[in-house]
Amino acid sequence: MALKDLWGRLATWATTPEGEPKPPAGEPDAPTIPPPPAEEPPPLREPDAPDQVPEPEPGIGDPPDAPAPMQARGPGHLLPPVSGIPGFATPAPAEVSTDGGEIPQAFRPTMPTLPVVPGLSTDSGPAPAAEPVEEAYEVQAAEVQAAAPAAPDAPPAPQPAPAAGHAAPQGGFFSRLKAGLSRSTARLTENLTGLFRKRRLDEEALEELEETLILADLGLPAARRIVGSFRRTRFGKEVTDEEVKAALADEVAEILAPVAQPLRPDWGVKPYVVLVVGVNGTGKTTTIAKLAQNYRAEGRRVMMAAGDTFRAAAVEQLQIWGERTGSTVVAPAKEGADAAGLAHEALQRARAEGADILLIDTAGRLHNKAGLMEELRKVVRVLRKLDPEVPHAVLLVLDATTGQNAVQQCKVFREMVDVTGLIVTKLDGSAKGGVVVALAEEFGLPVHAVGVGETAADLRPFEARDYARSLLGLS
Image 1 (tube, rainbow, N blue to C red):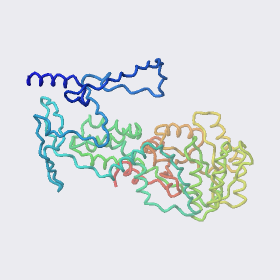
Image 2: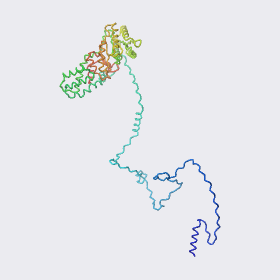
Image 3: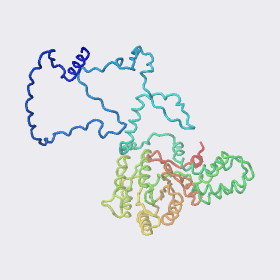
Image 4: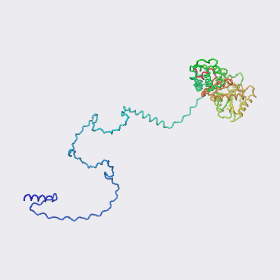
């Protein structure tokens, strides 16, 4: 009976709710209170639209391989110790060195392994040295300067005119002449370099020499004369470049020597009348001003006539030079006045005022314009009504940059008016300085002066030997 009674007690304990007191054995059970009736749940209503869209629940819509988000844990939450979980052991804490030593392997970040490309070396070589910050700043500054628009060039400051009667101090005229003829020298000598390098002077070499001289604007007559002299004196001989240059300088000087004649006015005749002619842009007005300054430096009384009545700037330019040099200027009353009448008035005033020299400017005119050339003849006729001997000199101003066209100009002006001499200007900017040799060989007119610059000191009497050696680049 004891075993059966124990089994019944166990069955009763299993069916009794936990925590409810058990009646002692032999006592009746307490009366049971019926539970209250269940209340009817309130009717369902649709919830209001939330102000903010709730964030999706974790794991919904995420890709399969996305890691699960960490759940928020309240304050003081502690994870259970790993040691309490069967099969896990708590690792010993690693000591991290803080004295600048090597970081333990456990704390080093794991870098991904790059694929190996066949044929490509994996040696990266020494690391390039870090460039200083200053250099990078300079590069950026340079880029900014390059990107900035360039400022317009400032106009050159006007060069002050030399004092009356004094030439501007510069280097020797020969050095300025040589520098001015540098382009002409290069044009002439570049073809000679290597042409006669230890080579016998045969017919083929002479033909090449003649072609070189023609291309350098010496003209066909002068080229044939020089080549003929080489054939007579040096044919069949072995020559060098330097020997040819020296021989050419001698030949050119021989051609130029007869025409190298400075302008020497007859001071016994008062006034000595000089008529200056030429095409447009050759520098006639500037040449007259330079001549006036040089003669004033000698103590001469100079008068200038502004005969270029069609260009107001020419009249004003001559008046300015008259003030600077202390020369008298006869100007037209209005633009476009008769040039012949102005020349007539100037000659009368020069006589009355006792001028030593009268320099008459004329308007530039093209040599192929018959009407303008006839007007130049009229000026000469009107002057000769006062004095049959005037003008005492007719100077043709030629621009060296025109090359062989200067030869044609000389032909036409010589036919229209009796040209007595030449002045060649702008040799400092020309590669055609050899044209002076062509003019000398073909016309034999005196070359009174050459110009290699803007100042009065840059207009000097023509020297044959200096010019020839400068043309060939010799000292």
